[in-house]
Structures are given as C-alpha cells and as structure tokens.
Image (tube, rainbow, N blue to C red; front, side):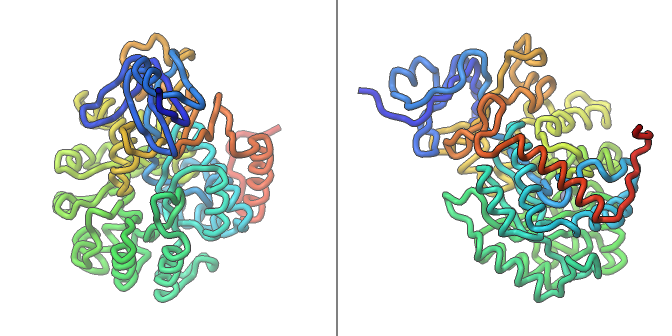
Length: 462
Ligand SMILES: [Zn+2]
C-alpha cells in the first residue's frame, strides 16, 4: 500500500540545497499538508507514494523558493522607473522617493504590494523581508495574503525627519506603531505574512526608538531590520552626532544581535565589520541599488570580508526605483559577478555561494532556517519548477552555473508556497493578471501626476 500525498513535484534535476548540497538526477519532492515529506529519486518516491497531483517532469529543474532579503513592496512598484537614473543618493531619497511614497492611497498600496508579490512569485521568490516602509499595513497584508506569498512586513517607523507630513511621528507614536503591528500580525507557524520590528534606519531614529525597537523584537521573538550605511551619509551623520560610526553606536545601544538584518552596509570600516561579526548580525546585500545609486560597492564594499568573517549575507532587490526589478535571480547573477571584477579575482562568490545567499542565507537572515531555504524533509513546501525547454537553459550541462549565470525568472514555470500552487505554466493562479496590469498602469499614472514631480524622460515621446 502506498502512502497518500497531496503533490509530487518531479524534475530532471532537483537542487536540494541540503547540508551536502545534493542535486538529484531524475528526482522528486513529495508534499503533504504544506510540508515536504520526502526528497529522492522519482522512481522510489513514485513506488512509495500515491499523489493526488503531479507537477513537473523530465524537462524541469526543481529548486527551493528564493528568499528576497530586502524589498519595498509599497511606494515604488507603482512608480517604477519614474525616478531618473542619474540622481545622487540624497536627491533620490528625499526629492523623489519620499514624495512619491507619501501620495499613495490605501488601495494603491494594496495593489502595489500585490504587484510586488506577483513579480517575486513569477520569478521564483516565495519569501521576502519587507523594508519597513508600508503606510497602510492592514490593507497591504490583506492583499499579500490573497496573492499567497510568504513575508515579514512592517510600517514606516522613524522619529527624527520632519517630513513628509504623512510620515511625521514622535518617538512614542513610532514605538506604538511597532507594538501595534506585532500584536495585529503575530508570527506563528501557519501565518504566511506577519510583522517584524522594522525601522527605516539610517539616521532617522533617536536612541530611545532604537532601544525600544530592539526590546520589542526580543519580547515578541521576531527579527529586527533596518537600512544602514549604503552611502557616506550615515557614517558621517553618526560621527557628527555621537563621535563614532554606526555599528559602534548600535552595538553600544545593544541593538545588534543574531536576529538583526541590516540592509546595504556598503560603507563600513574594519572595526564595524568586526562588531558585525561578533554580534552575529546579518546583511542584506542589494547589488542593483548599489549599482544604480552609485554606492561604490565594488570599490569599498566588504562583502567578501564579511563572508570570510562568518557574517551571513542574504540578497535583496530593494525598491523599484533603485533596483527596477524584483527578480532575485537577476540580483543573484550580479552577486556572483560584481566582486570577481571588482577584486580581479574569479574565486569571488562562486555561483554556488551566490545561490546559497539567495536561499539558505536568506532563510538564516529571516530566522527561518528550520522552515525554508532548502528542499528537506520537514521543511515548508516552497518549491520552484524551472522549464528548461528554453534557449537560455540549453544545453544543460552544469545546473548551478545555469541557474546563476544563464537563467532568470523568465524560465519559472510553476511555483508552490506552503504546498499550494500559486503559479502554473508561468501564470498566476491567485490573481487576475490582466486586471492587475491595467490597474497598475492606471494607478502609476495617477500617483505620478498627484506627486507633482516632473516627467524626466530624456527622449521625446511623439
Ligand atoms: Zn531599501
């Protein structure tokens, strides 16, 4: 008698990302009640199990769902590409991004979150860590839940900047926001979307807010995340205010720890790197943002030294005006390549290491190593099926090189989250795509018009 399962996912190759990094030729993944119950040779699993449904087959590569360690699901997806690509960091953030974020309505933020989730799912990302810049959290969580992605989210929390008006909040209000979101969206094993203790970060939080956010993360047993030191502005701000650099100050406040994920960390010095390694903090490396906003990541970035010091790195795609796509496979490709060139050393970030960052690294950064990041028995069934009947996938001679250097999200065929299919044959099963494209276009045009910001397209549109 064979055992019943819900789903059998079959592949030409199954990339497990298990501790020995086994790639199973003619392999399969057995799924029951949202969890992985077996991974092995297709012939063995077919003999052992009777599946309600079978997906994949002999021209598919099966991988774990990717984990996007930093993304703004609101504010930017519906204004993607409106910000010119030649604006320096300060102008980019304060003259463009903040005003654009601030004119979104609740319905637009909900749609924005859904568009971001759809882009991630269709390119093989099943879990994300949001940047902490949502304004209408309830609506966004509702929209994300409908799409069926896994994520950790939070509201826009800071207490120092005086504008834009809609984000103005004093320290007590800021702390109350974090407290409230952790109560409304608590983490549990079956909640796909829940809240973390998130701050915008940079130089936008007072010491009392840093401490409170830290305490709330500990009390609620959730992670903490914030932006830090993409450009020189942050270290210069901390040195001016406190006489030392950001990591020194944050360590003194007791903020840093193994449940902290910091985004960017391009402009860190050796002392800061040591502190980061000692405290066990994680880094979300966002290569596209660094390229587009000129952070100098290949010149001064210490990502290779972070890896050598044992700091865990995940990969993020950030906002759609700093990195105009949310396809983590494209960002993983950049991670594999940037430091090979920057250090003139082909040993930097092998394809396998870059892919580890997009899966296991992201899982560790999100405090979810026991649940996601690999295809192993007992983990959640977050599975991606890539179609290899495509030009960039053939010939298939080295799976990991193909995944990182040749393929991108276009080849993603089927995506399963929590054992449920959300993408099939490249199409969303949970949302009406045609309606989404039309709504996104209409909303994007309305938001940019409402912002009063100029259209800076350089070519004449006739
Ligand atoms: Zn960001």
